[in-house]
Amino acid sequence: MVAAVAAAREAGRGWAALPAPERAAALGRAAAALEEASGELVELGIAEVGKPRAEMAGEVQRGVAILRYYAGAALDPEGDVLPSPDGRSLLFSRHLPYGVAGLITPWNFPVAIPLWKLAPAIAYGNAAVWKPAPAATAVAGRLDEVLQGCLPPGVVHLLRGDSTTGEALVGAADVISFTGSSAVGATIVARGAERQIPVQAEMGGQNPSVVLPDADLGQAAALVAASAMGYAGQKCTATSRVIVVGDAGGFLDALVEAVRALRVGDPDDAATAVGPVISASARERALDAVSAARRAGGRLLTGGGALPGDGYFMEPTLVGDLEPGSYLCQEEVFAPVAAVLAARDLDQAVEIANGVRFGLVSSVYTSDLDQAMRAVGRLGTGLVRVNAPTSGVDFYAPFGGAGASGYGMKEQGKAAVHFYTRSQTVTIAPSRSL
Ligand code: UN1
Image (tube, rainbow, N blue to C red; front, side, top):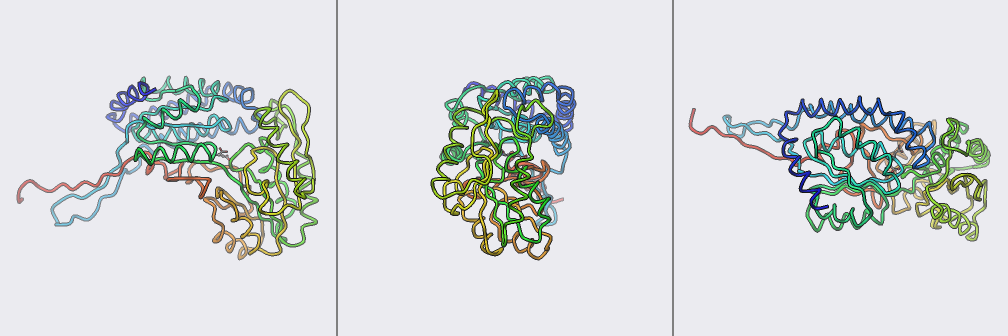
């Protein structure tokens, strides 16, 4: 493993020395090659991680767009020119690669997340050693082949392995980007601090959607249902708490109806919105969390059970009447399960929304601009979305959460250059009086 990092460091030297237009061209070729291989990657993703066809196809397209974006970003201005302190010298800052980026990625976005780390890491001149989750190595293997066909040898090194391999990588790379659970993220952050290297950790979510009475309730119900249950809730951006302000009756009926309307079934089917969860133990944990919520006084609004099928299916589930401090309202379940809470006004809704250790994304549904602005300013999450679902990410905008959801710099968009490079301030004075 340390050998993989050493080999990548060596390959990275040549890569960093290439003119940026050549690195940009390689990323452009990778975008075209991924587009060419997109059909295969969609099939592999459906088969390996159970992502429904429509979402998997969207994700691979997002991957192509990410590669194109960083092909362009590799040619962006790379620093600032500052006023000369003495009228003769040059003063400027520039960005230099660190060397080897260690990238640890989850199974749930097996194309987009690796690419939104790999593409900027290499665009700005680093080599990368990439350890995908064991549950997504088939997609990773094919994606790696696509990239290898477009890059000099050794610039990207795919490392198969488990948490021990991940730990070794964190102990050897020059900069670490991780997406995964909060528990693992915390150990990586601690190890990175010990080694005094930059670490970025994108971790869990417990994302609230606040619904105000003046919202378009039908549209809000459809968007909340999709963001809570889509891909069986296996996104760190999924909605886990629905906080309904004021008289909740009408919205609750619409939400239950929207959840029941989602097609649960074979991820291979283009009409499926909710496929299986990733494993037997994941389903067991989710069903246990629902049972515990019911014992704690929760009322089942819809769903609640396992479903038969070729895979670990469960019914999209909504639980009402819970306390904001209860397990289901505090922890990430990573399954098609959401809690519905009531709030008397926006202030109380914001207090409930912020009352968790996570802070990735929140959404607010309203047609009242003043209420929206009030909420946006007070919600503590890294992303806030008005009349838009919590899930879904714009690859050209900064992404990342607060608290137990995110540590370190944001990723994606223009934020990435600051993470994957070190800034150097350079003064050049004339060697003699001119
Ligand atoms: C999305 O909502 O499109 O692991 C992306 C996750 C997040 C990515 C979500 N880091 O679920």
